[in-house]
Length: 481
Image: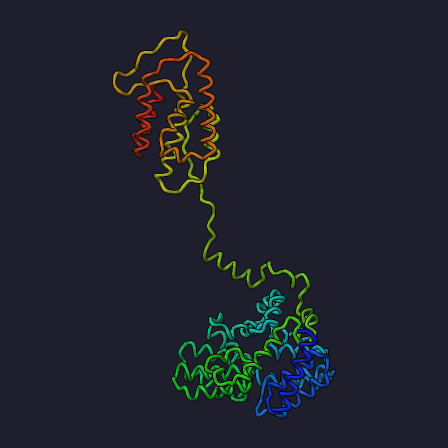
């Protein structure tokens, strides 16, 4: 907000206050504008005027008074007023933040540290508080692991609380005067259907905190949603907006009772609190409070490393849901004394991609490797004279000598198996075919041998997924050498 806009808005709110001095929201907005204008004396005066004009207890008015005394360097009076504010709303992160700053000014560091940790544990829709919690997430997670009270505070407004009803009841017995724990216990009882027990806790044990916004919210939801008493529920939501007009949870029926001018005040004051250079960041010793809980500048800037809470959660998830690893490649049986493999075969066995664990696919890959090895075994033996050999069998299955180039050519004619060969192998086979064509152009042509029928027949069995018969045909082919 520029200085020009600030002065313009301040003049507007001063005129509105003169027209209606009993509008508490106008006084609170005027107090915040005085703080932004570096006029602490006028801010304190405006806050005290708001307390005199307010018809009932108002959280924002009381918080503005505590902040005004703190800015006037009167920590004793500010501490009294901040305790009044905490008596209205013991679950307000802003109240705990102001209270921690006042305690730090009084050099009560242990109490200031606990108040600041409570501020960071409680949930809020305020942009400034959300950023502050993100900066200190490592420290607050470590503190919550050591202090169950802080972990319970973080569960108060969760849609799905992490803590059980029995665990919170045990904490209530250990801390019988803590209103936040009692409100959390009543909330869990209401969720589990124990309406009578929840109402007893809200209307008797928390009776001294009659303006506690969380208590009023739970009474509103219990009577309106679960008991169907809409008239009584409306009374509680009206009271909630009197105590804290900027309450983020009093939506729907709550805000429908407000006039348009009040809604404008609410939106403006929220915008002041949510500014990056908000009044709290400007006037409160946030960095000193961060030093109290052990937050370093490196921790504040690091948003990638896991916090202790996140590591614990990740470890639990890893135990429950193991991360899938790389599937193991099935072992392919090899002959006992295999001959030295050709470059194409060596490349096939070393660069073969991970194969599916289905037995049929694994069997097909095994058959393919067997076929390549057998084709390698069928390399022709040089004869003393260029004469043709007589066929071994008179039937249709006759053996022919096969070169590695012709074996690659036969394999390329099988579409089913060809798709299993990686692209690098296909390139090597194509290179082998080109080399064979160049070589064959330089040497005299040899007559075709009748064993071609047997190789084609074995390959057709492999194409038809008749794996056992194809393996037997290849083995017979190797024995006829």
